[in-house]
Structure formats: structure tokens, C-alpha cells
Amino acid sequence: MQDPEKPDGKQHTGDRVVEAARYALLRRMAFAMRHHMVVHLQPIGMITEVMERRLRMPSPDLAQVHESMDKINGFSRAAVQSCLEVVTWLAPEEGATIALDAGVQECVAMLRSNFNFRGFTLKDEVGAASLRVARAGLRNVLPACLLALTDRAASPAEVVVSLQLEAQHAVLSVMVLSAEGTAGFAGDPPYRLLEWSDVQALARSEGVAVQREGQRARITLAAAG
Image 1 (cartoon, one colour):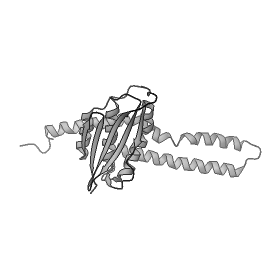
Image 2 (cartoon, rainbow, N blue to C red):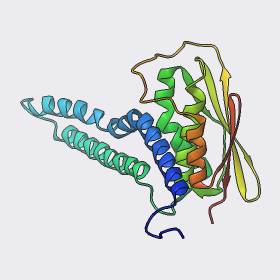
Image 3 (spheres, one colour):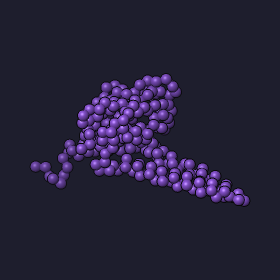
Image 4 (cartoon, rainbow, N blue to C red):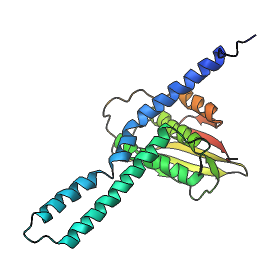
């Protein structure tokens, strides 16, 4: 009889595989997350320099100074919000859901700059889709799928995310299509390439179905209860 205090060997191994895949995904997304957090901080330094020059003038225009302060406050609030959003990628909120179109948009927005650097153009062709799905499932599986497909694709290329809606579920299609343009930059070697087995492990852990045919993948997401 299995000791209740000792995890089943197969289950324990499966958990380790999922955690390894999740760690690899987060490591691959680390630079994108860092950019997401600091993008609102960069203008603050420039505005502060302008404000300092204005304050050193013999007769500072206080209206302009107040305007600069308002801008700094706005960027500061946006930066705090960006940091809080990144934390939810690292520690997902239990039971959180999101409209499918908004969820795809945030995944694409998070990865777009990184993909552009690599020579891939991310295209979100999902359109309006109010069906609510598990946020953590979408955030884990879609980025993992995008990375796994492009890790072994040549750039330049377009990566298109499209949608087919059914009654109680949605099927996201991810396709890598050759395109004209400039090849991307290799940059620093990534933590490691994502394998399709990583995508499958993450999908199983989130109750999501995935299929792959060459440079095309399908992600089937159930409607959130």
C-alpha cells in the first residue's frame, strides 16, 4: 500500500517535469519581463532632467514644473502596475480568468520586442473573443508554444496566432510562415531551447490540449467554469 506521506513515484516525476518546463519558460521570458517592467521608468529620468533645467532658470515656469510632476506621477503609477502584472506571471492568481482576446494580446505584447529582435513578426489575428479562459493556462501554454516553434525556425518569418471558436472551447492556431525581410540577431545564447515535450508537460498540467504539425500548432482551451 502506498504510504500517504510519500508521493507516488510517477506523479513525483511528472511534477518535476512540469516544474522544469515552467522554469525554462520563465527563464526564456525573463528579458521580456524586464523590458515590460522598465519601459515606464525610462521616461522618468528624461523628464526629471528637463525639470531640473527649468528649476535652475532665474524665473522657473511653475506651471511647466507641475506638468512635469504630473507626467512623472503617471509613469510611476504605470511602472508599479507593470511590476505587479509581472508578479502574476511568476506567481499566478488562483482561479484567475481572462477574456481570450485580452489574454492573447498580453502574451503577444510581452514577447513582441524579443521576437522582433530575433527576426520574427508576431501577428495577433484572434479578433474579438470574449470567451473567458484560465489565465495561467493561456500564459503558460501559448508563450511556450510560440518559443518552441520559433526556436527551430529560420528568420525572417511571421508568426500568426488565429482563432476558431466553438461552443464551450476555443482553438488557437499558431503558424510560422516564411517572410521577406531582415534576419534577426542571434544575441546571447538562450537559457535553453524549448522542446515540444516542455509544451506538452505545461499543457497537461493546465488541462489544455496541444497538437503540432510541423511549423503549425493547435491549442484547445476550455471555457472557464
